[in-house]
Amino acid sequence: MKKITIILAIMVGFLVSCTKNFEDFNTDKKRAVEVPGQFLFANAQKALADMYSSTSVNINNWKLFAQYWTETTYTDESNYDVLNRNIGNTLFRIFYRDILNDLKEARRLVELEAADGDVATIAKNNKLLIIELVEVYTYHQMVDIFGDVPYAEALNIDDIEPAYDDASTIYKDLLTRAKAATDGLNASAGSFGSDDLMMGGDVAMWKKFGNTLIVRMAITMAAKEPALAKTYVEGAYAGAFAAGEACSFQYLGGANSNPLYQDLIQSGRQDFVPANTIVDMMNGMEDPRREYYFDINGDTYRGGIYGESNPFAQFSHINDRIQQPTYAAVMLDYTELAFYLAEAAERGFSVGGTAATWYENGIRASMEYWGVAGADADAYLARPDVAYATATGNWKQKIGTQAWLAFYVRGLEGWTSYRRLDFPVLNLPPAPDESAEGAVPRRHTYPVNEQTLNKANYTAAASKIGGDKLSTKIFWDE
Image 1: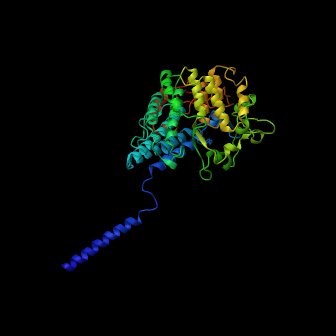
Image 2: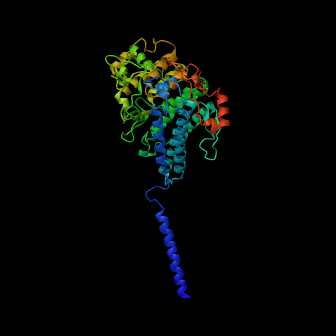
């Protein structure tokens, strides 16, 4: 009996050992079981910056819609064809899967992190609030692009048919969230450190980002909600970016190059030239930023005719600085803040300065960013067609024109500024898509896939906003 017991013990030990060995064999010890939260946060930041920066017509058409650039050979996108490549589907996938879902998972993982002591607890809370601000920024962009979008029911794996929320309601909720997150940030402790690819973990700068974002969203909806916008702008502007400050994504080159380098240089293609819309305007005002925006062609700056076929060699080209692999993507900065505050002053908000002062601050900030000498900036501002007191038109035309010029390269912001203020006047291409109804697009159409995969909610959303067309206006668009 004793002998049998010993044999059984040996056999059990062998089986346990084999089971353990098999488990070890089937476990990849070099691969993390779960990605750390800070890595997912960084990945979401990069996906956001890549989408925002790209000029690939498979991803977005913002620089074309804003008429900063036009196409050389294939002119579909500059004529507002967004269905051929189903760009709406690509945008939804990037926004929801690559950005918002990563932010959601990053939040979950950060919430699970142990925090030992007051400093660690504050740092953990800062991380969660910074994630919140990037999520707010992302949804804010989605509303500016599409209008109503899935929001309350989004990102639920068990709900593959989310309802679309009212765009104005989303905006108001985003403002509430942005203020709570900004007010909650505590610069006495850190956050993500070097894993934060936009601000390097600088909590004080994220607080300024939050306040600047509040000003941007509030002024965007000011025409429809003036009292609400006034409250938010006046409460946030003093804590926003100062001159020279910005939220940027710094590309490192190599495998992490700016998408513009990939699209314009690495691809070996010659698909884009600056559009005559912006080049002609800057020529007319002898804008000193021309040499930083474009490469001269012969002895003059010459833009391609927007929407038409434009032989690459016959026109000015995009400046080399913009095509560098390490060119940083500006996500939010003082330049745009200054133009928002010029508008706020015109609307009667108390923002510590006149519309003329903030307008001049915006132009000077843009000049400094591009490297224009101070004397050249002074001369430009002294021109009768630039100076706030004498420039042509009402305040919307003055601010809208100069803001649009300053937003160059940042196609989404340039297009949004145009849609909000209706200036400058943009050119109509020769063969605009019928869904644009003979005008510059006011929004982007929803993904074609939504018409089959989420039909009921898509149909309801399209009907509510007035039709899933490029010509349908976002709620804030007068």
